[in-house]
Amino acid sequence: MSTELSVDPTDIPGLLVVRLPVHGDARGWFKENWQRAKMTALGLPDFGPVQNNMSFNASRGATRGIHTEPWDKFVSVATGRVFAAWVDMREGPSLGATFSIEIGPDVAVFVPRGVGNSYQALEDGTVYSYLVNDHFVAGRTYPALNLADETAAIAWPIPLESDEVEISEKDRANPRLADVTPMKPKKTLIVGARGQLGRALAAVFPEADLVDLGPADGDVQSLDVSSPEAVEAWPWSEYAVVLNAAAYTAVDQAETPEGRAIAWAANAVAPALLARAATEHRLTLVHVSSDYVFDGTSEIHTEDEPFSPLGVYGQSKAAGDIAVATTPRHYVVRTSWVIGEGRNFVLTMKSLAEQGVSPAVVDDQIGRLTFTTTLADAIAHLVGSEAPYGTYNVTSGGEPLSWQQVAAEVFAVAGRSREDVGATSTEDYFRDAAGSGKPISPRPLNSVLALDKLEATGFQPPAQLDALHAYLS
Image (cartoon, rainbow, N blue to C red; front, side):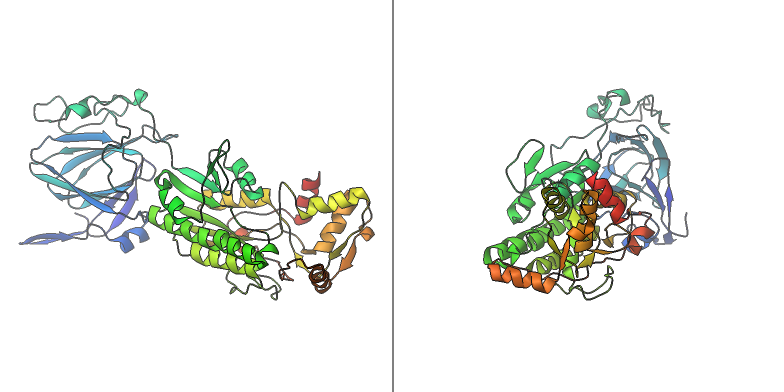
């Protein structure tokens, strides 16, 4: 028997063998069958079991399987010994891979979702236990494989044709591998799919399900993520990753009584509800944040800078960030000056340049543009590379610019002189807006976000001028 706890990989991706120390004396034995802290430290997924099942086999030779459940499980023996075999039934290159081992009190196996299980009792009165991370629902169907499948070629210690072996009629009727529909991986959900970032994410995650607040239309389903009832009713067990690109971004309108309520519902309540669902269903939640959670007094904003929002929009976004950080598997992606499809600052300046207009643009707000393609690519990188969970700044790279400098570059690309773009201060802009009676939100003067943490994961964002020229072309 093993004297030290260990976790070892197998030929099936994600299937892990756990060697359990068993301490015995004349009275019997004791083992720590499931020890979350020690086992996760050795590489076992923190899979969050919610149900414990026991299976009793009265006689040697009882054989069960091969069943492919839609949850993760941790299998161990309470008494006796079993021969256990697994077949990968997941869609992908490892489909059909097999692994088998004899399990006694000193061995347990972690079985990922989509890997078929089978067990043969080697002793009378065998009891094995399994923890699962989803509740059993009667009537749910999932793939099964015939115990005698030739491609799996499991070397049963007691031959299946033996008089000792007892197999249910249902298991005898299971199909061969060629006739099995492989289990698909859990899905990705894009929230806010009609927005400019949502559309960019859909291009990078083409298999994702799409939802938005409005009515269902084509591939986009309707989901009000600010409604507790709607979020509770959504089938989260079908998903692994949720990308929250939904937000209320009417910064000035958020300062009005009506806009304030909408901003808090979209930017704070909705992320909190998604975080609760992510925790309950062990989802990875990606949430997009904003430079507006800061007051702009720092020369460069790092991921761990304390919040200091100036207006309602920034306050509601900061509240959303705090809520999302409560779920274990989260990425808060903080960005600034987002440019994508549809109406935006760059296209407005391009239009003014083409119309012969010479605007005045603020020159004391400094930052970097972030194109939705860069933002979507960075999110895909963080999720795909399994970067450590937490907050990451994502913008274009290169030297920071003012809005006036960005506008001047747009004019130059459009064939106008950079000098045709005048300069004004944020203070004068506020004064003019106040005089017009329009609502106005304070802006952070410095929106430059540090990119060191993102770059350390292996993602290098393009320089903002290069990205701007590519966008305009």
